[in-house]
Length: 593
Image (tube, rainbow, N blue to C red; front, side, top):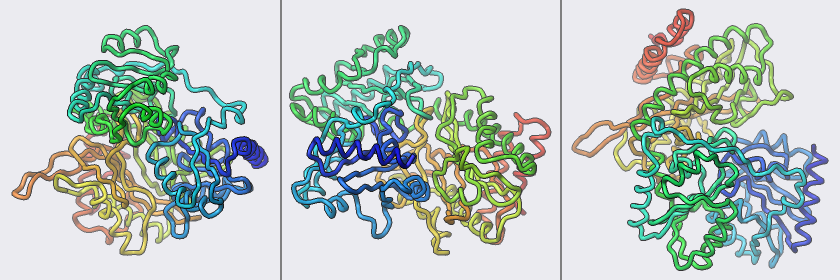
């Protein structure tokens, strides 16, 4: 594999030489700024061999680097070994940014190439500004991988389908009217949607083009008077065509978007900052482009009553599957024949037996002992550890159901564990509970709450590099904005109806990882003389292992919260379980005295 990567880099350098480029940047996104991308756009993975979902590769004439975040440091070090590509650990002391590194290794006047379809306008403008400090020029080129990636997969052609209003809770006509009212308020003549989850939400359609995400590759242009869907027409059934026509949506070929945008004249076009640079560049030739989050971004994030009800029902089914799995795991590990990949398959089996199951919401992270320290570890048959009746298993998984999306992490003791593991487990649990108990005033953003999950750890000199929480889509992307809970400033306000995860963790490199995660719903709290307050409702229904807890480290309030949560888990799941499963769950959710 390393020899193959070296040959691929050589092919890219030949492209660079033909185009008078001193460096080439390959991003990990697609034209729609997706986290999961179709294989057709996995160019960064192809050129580096690094398989993580986030990262940017930069190849110069005689050097190369990969920038990624703390979730992938250990994975990237292993996969880049022998390729000649250096790992640059983002947001760590001493690590230069991409532009800083290029300014250091290149000369004034050198050209840096990139594909404008696979990076956003915001990222492009930032790069362009920073490279110009050294006199470097950022140049948009044709996609080099069209030429050098000879067996490149095609753009997906799976057929999308209609999501019934009994799941979505709002018809497409109403959604289009709400979007158009925002266009009028902003004095925009049109809004271009390029984020695939925003298009799927607007049209009440879902697809199978993206791994783990029920989306279909397309653009959607909405004006006050018309709407056009840009999509491979061969993908559409007669039913879908009739459905779109009934909402006065014109169907156009996917590739027509650029020429149509160019042909607009003196229009105000609203685009998200995540729009790819190539489309933005085309639009600015004859139009005024307003860069701001689309109205769909917030519409989609605030779930309606039907969607909230669907989330509750999906979580019950997912909780049943988790109980069945955890019971099975407890027995199976003792036999010594289970691995990180075999338990993943078993969990999938239990979920697949649930009503409305549509697949997983992300690739399962099953990390035993030292593998748990790799934040986004993905086991293969070659790397998978065999589970033993000792130590910790970190299991982060989720599912897609027609009525909701789930995301849950549990750290499971498979047998005896060390005192250090127990202390870290309890620190994580304290942070998890403190955030879960939060009550906060209207106008609060996620950054203001992030410290609640970290303060107990900080007192021990411990921290984690990833965010504490992200939005969750309704039968859509498991990672959904605009709101997040994390240390770096995220200005999006937390509002009732939003779903968000709570997932603090501690990771000891080469030893173990610990994370506990629930998906939560923001709901109204209290009204006081100081204003309106909100709080969190726990959507996830699954016991949290009590054996590793050091009781003395928990406050009475934290113990009470955990006991109440476990009582809720038992009350909501027990009616659907067998007597044996009920007995097991009763023990797992019994109160800490």
